[in-house]
Length: 180
Image 1 (cartoon, rainbow, N blue to C red):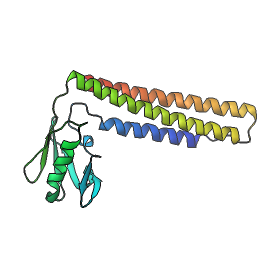
Image 2: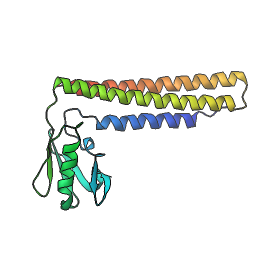
Image 3: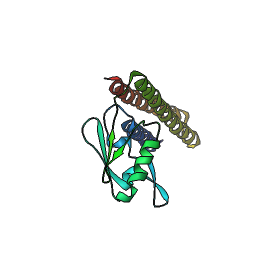
Image 4: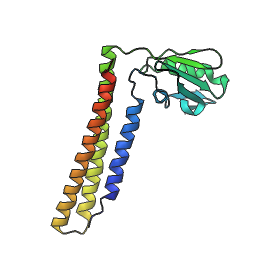
C-alpha cells in the first residue's frame, strides 16, 4: 500500500508557505510583515529587517520601526526607501523610524493583485511538483495496478483540494486588497 502522508505533508507545507506570502502582500493597512524580510546591510552583512529592529503597526496607516542599535537607523531608513516595490517614505527622529502607509490607488491595487496572482501560480507549480514526485514513487513501488490507480486517484483528489484552498485564500486576499 502506498503511504500518502508524505505527499500530504509536502502539499500542506506549500499551502502554509503560500499563506505566509499572502500575509506580506500590501492591502492598504499597516502590517509589520510588510517589512519583515526587507534586507538591510548592517555590520557588513545583509540581514532581514525584523532581525535588526522591532516592527509594530501604530494604527492602520503607520508602521513604527525601532532599531535594536540606533547607529543603524540611517541604513534601515535607506533600505526601506530603496525598495521601490513598497513605495514607502520613512521618517526618523534619531530613535525610531515612522513609516506612513499611503492609501492605495485603483491602479496600485490592480498591480498588487497581479503580483499576488504570480504567488498563486508558484504555489500551484510546487503542488504539481509534489504530485509528480508522488507519481514517480507510486510507479517505483511494488504495487498491483489497482493499488497504483487508487493511489494516483488519492493524490489527484488531494491536489484538487489543496488547489481549491489556494484559490480561496487568494480570492479572500484579492477582496481585501480591492476593498477601499
